Structure formats: structure tokens, C-alpha cells
Length: 295
Ligand SMILES: Nc1ncnc2c1ncn2[C@@H]1O[C@H](COP(=O)(O)OP(=O)(O)OP(=O)(O)O)[C@@H](O)[C@H]1O
Image 1 (cartoon, rainbow, N blue to C red):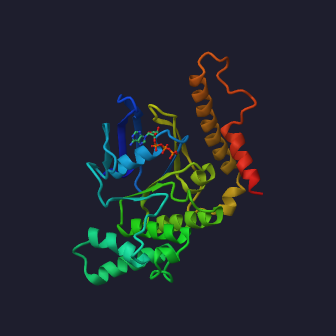
Image 2: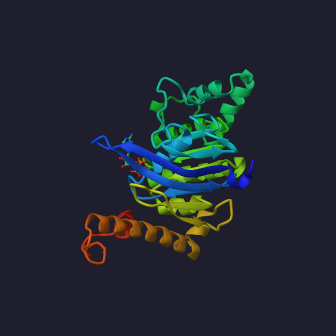
Image 3: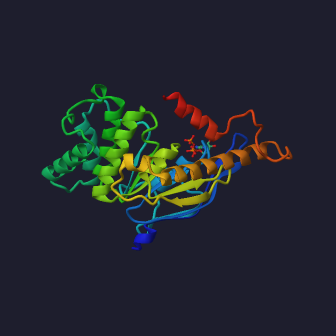
């Protein structure tokens, strides 16, 4: 096993049929290598293919071409060495938090003793801050608590790779920050290699060791990679007042702006400079407006 190439994605292609039956390569030539224990975020415009890449790594979405190697072995389908947290936790409503987490543990550790399984579930639930609420049913929990169960369910399987597909997308900003820190706390302890799909550039910078910027599809691939040079454990207040944070954020926003300009230039070939009309807000302007609206 090579710890520098713990996850290796080579020439990955995903083609989906379009409404006319023709195959469209949504993702094409996607190459990425992730170190063991690294936290990598993937950002890109809506519909570029981020979830497609993540679900292929999870083994839930067949690969059209190329390959994915995890810890030296080519993947060929879903397996507990890769667990996923989606935007919606999808808990079984007739089971408590404990029962929902135990379900996967029983499946993945059939030979563990009863006590070992209980210990795994108790550890996972307390790691996400649910030690006091483990006997609650989903209907008795807030959205944030339900997502904590979703995270506990994923880490209880002791995955080699944790795949997070916009796991905070439905949460309010305070809960979102709490859960970002829950995840970072777990990773500081357990050193799980993690991939996060997000639209939130601040989240990407705050949480990651590296950010992968995906170009627009069709034919989406890795556009740029950016190392985030902040020590762990992360200190939110210190980072948010550090000039480097804003420089990283700026670079991500610039990349997203450039992708948007390129898309518009493609839609309107020969329309001058390829830049959008000044009256239309860019990704950065829309985002700044959205942030301003919070205050
Ligand atoms: N099963 C499918 N069949 C056909 N096309 C699909 C299928 N799944 C996804 N697509 C298309 O592939 C493209 C990439 O989708 P994907 O969900 O991976 O993008 P994304 O970057 O994760 O988007 P978002 O940020 O909005 O979640 C989109 O154009 C989508 O419509």
C-alpha cells in the first residue's frame, strides 16, 4: 500500500444517455490521487458531475471507463470500506438512533460479539454528540440530530474512505458549523481519508487539506487543485481572521467565475470577449449578495 496514493482515480469517465438516447460523457478524464488521511473537498458548478464522481467511488454508480483504486485494490462495487453520508440521512423511522447505527454494524461485523457491536455503536453515537439521545426515534430529532445519526452510521463501519455528499446542505448555518466541527473532531481522532462535495467555498477552505476544482461538464475533469496550508486541529476564529483564508477563498471564487464565463461563452459563440453582460451578476456577486442577506 502506498499512503500517498491511497485513493487513485485514473482517467475516469461516466457517460449517461441523453433524452435522445445518445451517450453523453458527463465526466471525462478525471484524474485524482488522494493521500491516506487527507481531507479533500470537491467544488464545481451545479450539475458538473461532483456527485457522479462520488457515487462512482462509493461503487453505487457503474464506471464507464477508467478505474478507481482504494488502498491498492480496484473497486468493483459498494463495500463497507467506503461509507457515504448524503444530504438526507434517510433513517429508518421505526428504529431509534441506536437501532439505525446498529443495523449497519451487524451487517459489516457479523462475527463481532454482542458487546463489541454495542461498543462500536456507543462510540460512534457519542463521537457525534448523541450519547444522551441514542434512544430517540427520528421523529423526535431535529434535522441536525438526524444528520448526526447519519454520520455516526457512516463512521461506525470504520471506513477507509468517508464520502460526504453535501451533508450539511439542508441545515441552517449554525447547525452546519456545529456539524463541520463534529466531523473535523472525528477525523482528528480517527484519521479517515475523506472526500467532501460542497458548494460552499468557506466550508471547503475551513475543512480541507486540499480542494479539487471541477470544470463544467460535459466532459468535466479536475481543473485545479489547491493545498490549504492551515494546521490541524482547525481553529475557526483564527482562520477567519487570517489573510490566507481570504486568498484561498478568492482563488476558488475566481475559478468558479471563470467556469461560468466559459459556459456562457460556449452558449453564445462569437459574442465578443466571452464575458457575460455586465448587468448579469456573476457567481461571486450572487454569493456576496447571499452573504449580505444574512446580516
Ligand atoms: N442517472 C442519470 N442519467 C442521466 N443523466 C444523469 C444521471 N445522473 C446525473 N445525470 C446528469 O449528469 C450531470 C452531473 O450530475 P451530478 O448530480 O453528478 O452533478 P453535481 O455536480 O453533483 O450537481 P449538484 O451540484 O447540483 O448536486 C447532470 O447534468 C445530471 O443531469
